[in-house]
Length: 281
Image 1: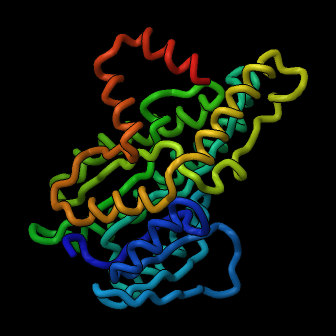
Image 2: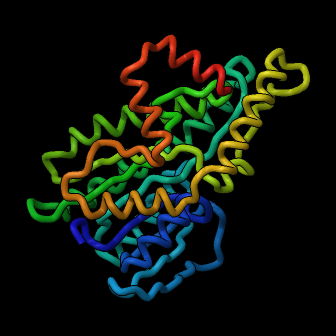
Image 3: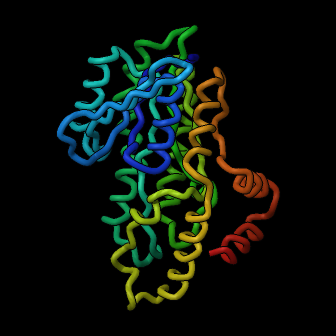
């Protein structure tokens, strides 16, 4: 294992995070998954595989709480003495027009999707730096989104939080290079998970909203695309490939269709891309 076998993943109670945790544990990784929901005691699931006996141990961690983060990290380090890989996956989406979204609603979106990842990085990097060396790299994987590269109408604040994560990750990769800590962005497209059920609609997106008709149409498209999207296993397989690369790329888009869209973004005029997105949503 290039990066070692101890992995900390945020947001593993369902969806992509759960899929990643199970795939890694099946390959022999010692996975510490997290959930913000209170648990009576840490739950460990053992996976027997050809790569050794991996496991997932669920630990309570709320990325919006510095105290909760420090407590969970202290627990992992006490058991393992290190954290080789950090995967910042915790996140959710809000939907609604910019005009209908309050500053508080926008902050809550950023507090998890961006500041949550920032808090995790700030607390894990010093631990990684102590254990990383010339022949022992560490790895941070930030789960972004295609929406972090192409902003989606009526998911503007969600897109903004992922754009911010992209920018931070690009700079962080350069900052950590001297310490042999790699940073990679993984950008899933539409994925069939509980993301739809957990999406929050802004309070202002009600019957009185001037955007109501267009918002409902856009939301229906989002739901359809996500329910017919690929499974979390696709993202998990991408993560496994990254873990086998000593010099991974800065970003990897998940799904052939989305790779094509991102490629076209570099080639077509901005106005044409705007037209396509407006027609889709």
